[in-house]
Image (tube, rainbow, N blue to C red; front, top):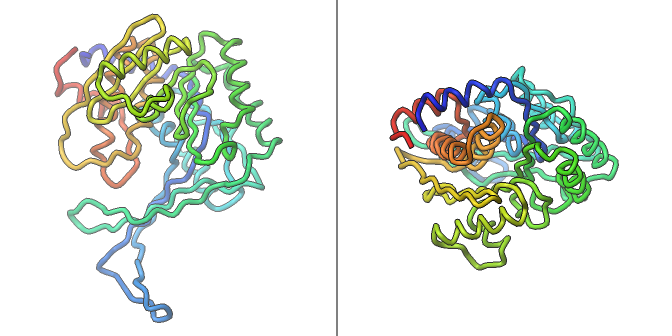
Length: 343
């Protein structure tokens, strides 16, 4: 893609309205200074002294952060948080951008805010080292009343958006935003709004989801097709096309260092190679940057190949942001595009 063509696509981002529906969580980073290590008098165990704390929206919030970085004009949030301190931090993080609407970000008294707490050993001039993560999750089913309110919110934003991204981040079924009831509502909305772009991603796999655009990795692709693995690029292309024809919507498969494969139900299949590694990498957030860039580019009128090319460039930007859940700005994408041959 030429920088000029990217400029044309990116110039339309400010006019887009995109909804992000799913499991928003708080990414809290605890930066530990090893030079201040102590031993607890009471227990005799090592004490890690935290020199800095930073927090930002994670999970579906990472997709949102990337949409903000792209300059998308309006971003609708559909999800929930707990009535707790982590929820306050998460809401504050979401509302830090004027382009984000939290009208449909619900506070639930009977739920905890989904939180990833990430301790990092930080030494000057070195790559941060992450210790064991501390997670806070909900392990009981999402209350029915909350589910109904989320469905109402989904229907409200569907009436005014150009695209809807759905992200399931929880490990236990029915404990987050994406419940069976919400999937049934999405199925109905695809009939009511056949031209509305839906793009879905789930860490639990996308088997049984309605006919929406699907984004997954190679292991998830194999699981969808009841295969032990899908190895060669040609195998991935064939399997991706099979799924696209079955769903009637585009399918995208990320392959780490081998790039991204995408297929449309009409038969078009593309493979875009990953960009070379340019230094230390941290893959956290790379998949979410792909999701955000695919949705924004397609909603702005990019072709399938153009959208995948931009997603691959965004992923390359993000994996080189070490020790944080990164994002790719329009300037980041333009700078990297200047360094690679035009397609």
